[in-house]
Length: 80
Image (cartoon, rainbow, N blue to C red):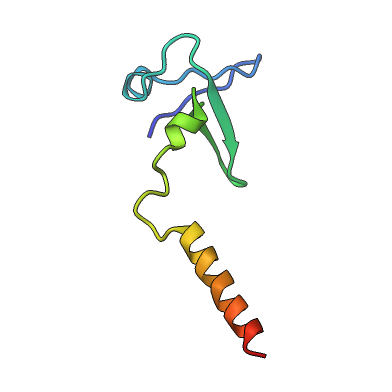
């Protein structure tokens, strides 16, 4: 963990090892995340849709689960 000082203008310098590790170069956008008791500096997503691609891969298909649930509801309604 590193320590930084907030300047009078509110600037904080991110130490070089962290800038290198997270590929933060001049002009890179970052997001400030408020966790309640603490804050975080997170690299902003350049292309959120591309970066999120495959995020839910491998799990149960929500579409298939919804269609199965609807079939079951229909079967119950037809049986009344």
